[in-house]
Length: 167
Image 1: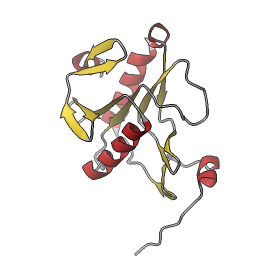
Image 2: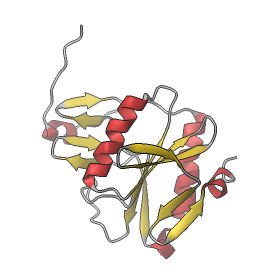
Image 3: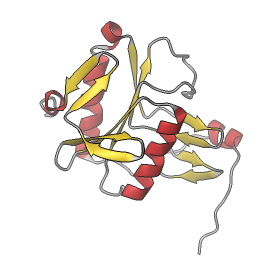
Image 4: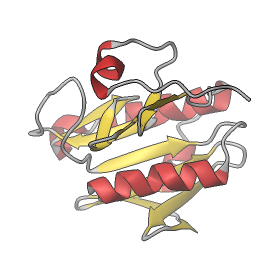
């Protein structure tokens, strides 16, 4: 059985991981690597929200370290931040929305813990995209439910509009 190596928050924050890893209660957790469809969804979401950033007063950040609690740093696939939020190296103000794009290695139990961390931080809108069938889920109050739209502030975006961006 492999021994778990504990690191301090300070060590985690000053260390670069390739690919970037999350910090959970003193343990570095690798993130599942995305494949082509995962990457395509990151690009589609970044382009869609990025092209509306100025108009909607938002910033789009793929894979931004986010402090969800004193002992946890998570990395959403896409974070949507208020344009006026501090521009810290690590997000400390809850994003307006966070997107997780499933990878083949993802496990539901681990995903639910990650989403709960974002929710406890105060992230208002949490979405999961499944590239296998281009489906969307919204996470709220500990539950994943199928969704047809993405709600961001006063905006309501039909998910099929985003599916159309995939090339």
